[in-house]
Image (cartoon, rainbow, N blue to C red; front, side, top):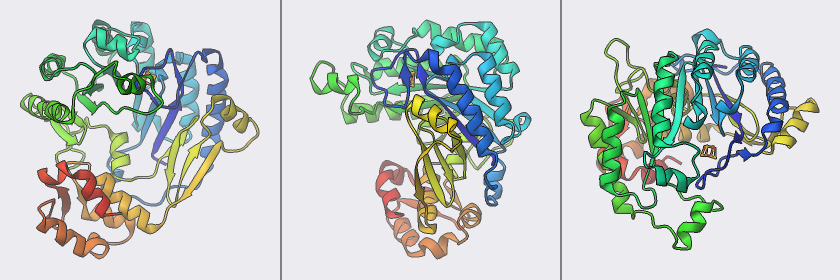
Length: 395
Ligand code: SF4
């Protein structure tokens, strides 16, 4: 298997908007969790190999993605143990190895140098805002200055592939403030940005504060204007938007991964958007191993107990039909500016795009929602605005 997601469900404290599977104040369980994770990775190594992939998918190479939670709460020794166990699944020396990171955990240059020396070659830092009062309101553990300092430490440690995550449409945020943020981060010369509009998840403290009227978030029009500002400012600065929420700075010396998809695009996420198979390990992790998808047990101690009993810690398995595979290949691929390649679709799904969706393609082309040149099928700008409606047509 070429792609592996590893979930680290620990954070120093929970952010006000977060509904990920992560836990604060469980630091004392990290070591036992890492042991269980290594055992699970050894069990996964015995699964049968994934079916053949398209050339597009194969060109991504192997990937490992440490997500969370806050993977950079792990010690270097814990990272090393996990990577050694993962090496039975993924060839480490050829892989893009990303770790998500909270900037508040990246203030020790030695730690960053150690992480880079272990083979982690991409950091994805959750900065979210450059406005300190907003960072405090969100419950983040870092300031804007510390986020910038983390970027500089990461550069000094040898990281030449950085992503920063930001959220727009935050409580109290104005378009002008967001544009200033964009102008500032452009000067940081980062390879990759992931920009997401705020999603208010029920059960989070932020949801409760907004619904109680204690905080006000920008309306849909204001949030759409922020998205357009991101497209125009980053575009003017030379970034390529290769996916709905993702921008990358092209490197003229490195070949594109896909059309309009420069080499520093996130290969692991591209594997998701190409609807490739991937394994996932850790509490609450979701894997995709056609013809099934699986979800692991969410609780840390339940997960550790399940692995100790000698079983894969899977809570649920979902069967995927050939029709599911085709629909998901379309829905994921249309998020990319490169769209869905006909050769990729046929190799992944065992059936041509035309045979699968011939009349629907004609209809959506006539409605100017997609373009189709028999090589690639893409959303038009209008289709992008109505993305969810187009995706639903392929279900
Ligand atoms: S650091 Fe990330 S994973 Fe942890 S609570 Fe905050 S948003 Fe959630």
